[in-house]
Length: 438
Image (cartoon, rainbow, N blue to C red):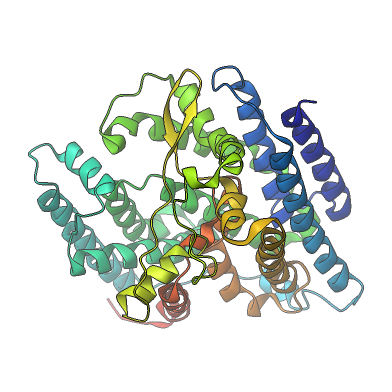
């Protein structure tokens, strides 16, 4: 039996069940997860001979069970909110008249200067840290060499830049895309965003750009739903957005591969993209045959050592633990493809850390949290106005769900993450309230 094709059929059946149960709620955690796992599976099938794929029963059952838990937990939460039959969106008539956020021109101007200055500080640090006359080579060096430090101040600058970009994007999307304000009136809001994106480009972390596209998509859909009604916003209306911005991202992703990786790729652009989309699932299959290929050590004294690696790294820096968790090792894709990866979908690190049963518990908790917030704060919220702060933060971390086909994004969670959430909330709350006169 070809378990790879069986997995694709199972995923499609799950998606059809989910679409029927949610009436095609295309921003719900379950729909996003199933759609991307289907895309990943198709990419593996496309490269089946090229990568010399041999899909095993354990992989099929692990992924099938994990997806079943993810959508099962979501649908249960949806049902529990639905049967309450409480009044929802009581203040929608008021929100429908909302004209957008008014960020004073002086505040926009000061923000543009401040965050552009932070971007310059970080770019200069990258140039100096790379130690090379070739600027593009420096980007690749800083991205790949974990021993290189750009300094405390530049590090703080890029972290703040990454956070503020979500808030300013939210204001821009709400004002221009949803409330139909003039672009010229809000153009200055994009300056901090462009400053952040420039710094991120110099950091070499290309995937972060996708996080912002995901956030823009989510903000736009949810705000339009709040404005006009849940059922009026259809997936087909966003095909153009997905096609245009997705294509631009893919082209830039391919174009910058040599800069970031610092070596030549013999694969075509299409092979390169299908590698990123499909290889985590393929590598998960290889990993399950021998987890020591990617995880040389099992840290029995640190629960979820790889699943929450940055959290434990933070504890080590604080002197609370002495164990340093090794990074996940690369595995070769195999076949005739030159290259490898160190991401194994949502299930790879968790299976190594917790086993089959523990992976199901972890998946249930992850999707329980995201689904609970989604249905309580958005789909079945009583007052839209009270959910907007949650919307900003949820959108900033929505990529955790989008990327489950790729890896367990909880590896990025740490104590600092909650500080970052607080900063996002403070910026969202106070920027519109600051009234400086020109």
